[in-house]
Image 1 (cartoon, rainbow, N blue to C red):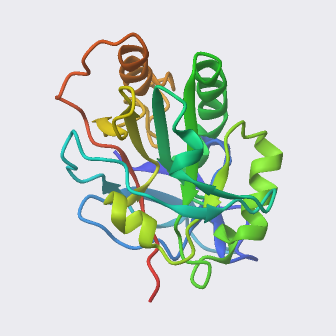
Image 2: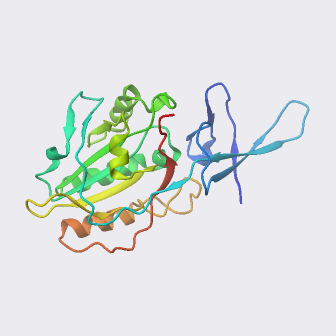
Image 3: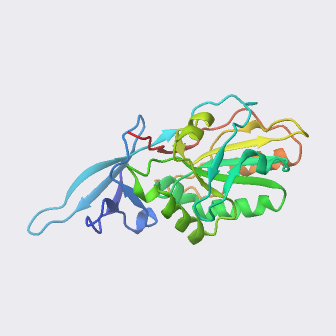
Length: 246
């Protein structure tokens, strides 16, 4: 069944969704993917009957990255502080969570507050966390570094939020969507090795009947921090496609 949403404005490059979509903005420039989300919208015009049309938001699944994959090296700036971060900055931690996110994607917006809560909890237990935005600021200026800094400050991100302007880091990780989650473990002096590459949980912005819990990601982190193996059966993350440079 299509989700019925109210259009409140067309004065910006975004379609502003009504309260039934938790107030998210859906970018009209989202690309069409194999399994798009379908949003059916009703509009009323003066002296006319209600009309409807379908907007397709990019819905992309994370691809299979081989478990055991070693975390790629990176050197990326944090727009909020100006600091440049590398993989070595997290070497002292037993586990590392790498998240590919952005500012505008409805899938990311739906989880932002819970991601902050979850990461704060596990960072106190020794987990290292870093978020990366690789979206093209040329096609999506709202995902550029200036707005990344504002977003990090607004939501109180407890982790560095880094800008991958060249998009090389996203390619090195094999990232294709936002949000996309990678959990790496570290045994002694061995490099970080991938143990989880899957979804946050079963919740989706198109289905408010499933609460946001972070269950899948939390279970993986719990197992890594307690020295237990992480099951290899993992549901892919679902979100907007990364906006590559044209």
